[in-house]
Image 1 (cartoon, rainbow, N blue to C red):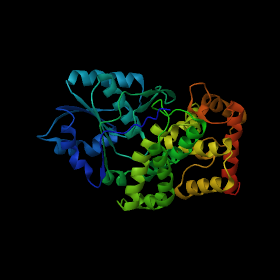
Image 2 (cartoon, rainbow, N blue to C red):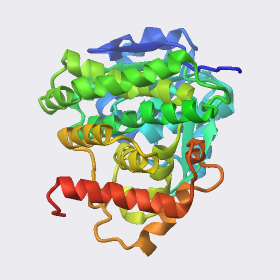
Image 3 (cartoon, helix red, strand yellow):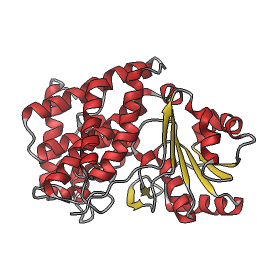
Length: 366
């Protein structure tokens, strides 16, 4: 049996860590092409120039909001013309994934500077490509993990709290999916078996969420950087990134991918739909009641979705939901790593049951 574990080259996190970016980038190249999300460009472009002044040359470009082939190709051409030898992605998940793909196609190093802690994308070699309407098209595994991930928790604390909570939804899947891959003997995202390290980090991710999730949300609402916030940012970004990639994905992310086929869900964040996927997986894989209660209680405490109405699907019929169930179990999906029979009908039943339990706990009011 061959185990494979993947890690970023260097991970830097802390209050006002952005000031260290220039020297960190200088370790990787001489001229950087920085791809900014629109909000990140407004917030941080001046700070980037201050941090890199006299250290490394930087060319900046604005990301056009969707990680799709046309945008990837546009940025790839701009990067080539710039003569840069390093790609920097500054922003949220789609900016990060686009930056990783551009760097991979250029065969250049990549540095990732997340401005929100909403997904585990920053540390991974995986990237998801969408169509221009926002539906998932396919996943890409780049040849290397990011060479640098730098997270300034002062920036994270100023972002809307919904992003942090969404990141907790994405991180919530890490342990459940790694455990599913372990039980079924499935390969991870690197094409090998998960290591003890991967499974231990995945479990630490889950335990950290339960211990510090609510306190971190309160801190973020106050715009404050506290130990709890630091712990959750690390869980959302580093622990979840290492755990999902080296442990493996399963039901929760396949449910997310299926839900993107339903237009109303596209207004909701990745981690919010993944959280609904986690709840669905609890019933699909026959988890014990105590664990189901624990997960629902956590989701309720931090404000993650627990019903279909919470992701824009109130009063949707079986026929309307079925395309999501069918998309979730296409042959290449992660859900087939579960040690149970997978059919669209089984997924639909589990999704409806997860919704029913969420409604029951809300007193049947939706």
